[in-house]
Length: 172
Image (cartoon, rainbow, N blue to C red; front, side):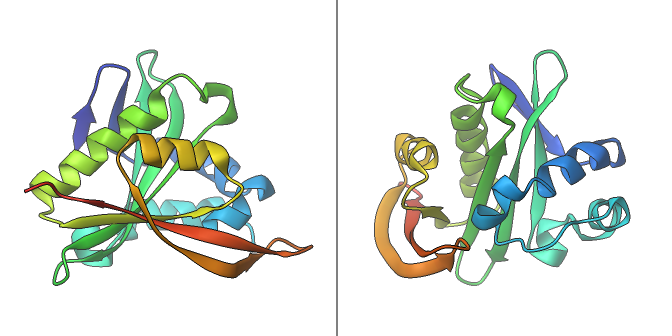
């Protein structure tokens, strides 16, 4: 599957992406927001790409965000796909070297449109730490609405951090 926009293209993660994904996944700066607490090996990432990266079978899918120079600038994930209740979670990571260039909002917009038009979801949701101001701006600029706050939800090693719950609903 390939989804295209003006700034970037989204495509399913492939074996050639393993090293990049391992680098991003094993960056401890990302662990709190991704609810990760240990490193991933290349073999684990390869197994995910080959056997688990299917939204219909495993309720999850990772797409790579590729710029016009064919560089991987980030990834965007769908998770907890629920066909019966017509909802899916979404998460995005933009490599720090490519932040602030419009890739995040375009990738998010493209994938949300795909979710509404092709997966037939009614609601797309995400969780954002209350101090993650760039993600808050991103999701709010894409039309996501704050629908609650989970108090003291995540431990960052020094304190518990609140986490916002955002949703975007399909327009009728």
